[in-house]
Length: 358
Image (cartoon, rainbow, N blue to C red; front, side, top):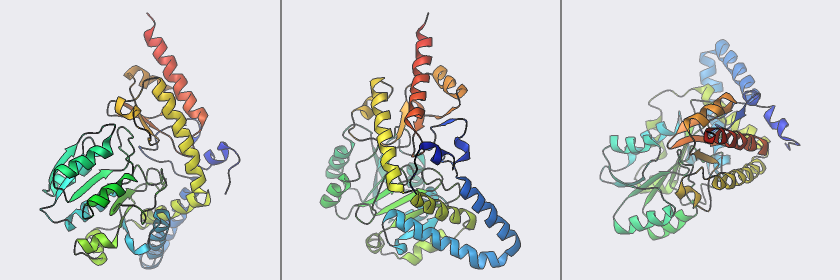
């Protein structure tokens, strides 16, 4: 499906009406088509009950796996469904030997460090900086690690790790296990799991995939399970210790299918152009952290160094954003436009000017 103008896309997402939605990194919007499907599916469940669980629920989970495999450019038997990114990672960490040491990133998504700590793994954190990838490689050369776990896109700063650089790391440290939290990455950037140096990637569907809550997945390479002397069946056993919502799993499959029907790659290219435009405008205004400004590539997530007064001005203007880290986080997806960005910048400029007046 080719969209002739931005309104055609926005009309598919009712929550975009009457606001400037710059908060996909917090939670993605839901299409009217998905809501209609969810209502029909819930009605079917109310009538069929046990037969629904035995039949349609299985069909929906199977479709979700197929769509994730299509999205991630991988085989279906390397895809595992979970209720969230964190649930998948939490379960999978039971397969990592307890004497393995982890390399993590400071200020990464707190759940990563918490889960590694809860499982009683030894770990070291490296600070976020301009030459992050080179610093990671230097640390791996200096000290012994078995696992490097990190978010592809940092939830606070929006820093985008150079995923191609992972090949350089993997070539020098072929036995290093690379685990990636892809929740702020999958659906926002193009990614080929099979061609990547990533051994395992974990994601939730409620942000950039626009699939609502309660669903997630992980992709694990067969070589990783072989390295850990584990199997697909053992991983499934860990994940099946609690119930997964058929409606949530079905929503994941439906949402990904809908994105593909929109020509997802074309929309991601459009989003990338908008993010670059946004990045340059924010750098000109000195609204980003220094190490972020120095990066050549960045994601579509930005944390703005603005005052509480400016934040309140944005809220009053119904610009949807959220407090994070050193300031206020905003993010753009394929349904955002130059006008959305310009409106935010205009409001920041106006609020800043007013605050400078005597």
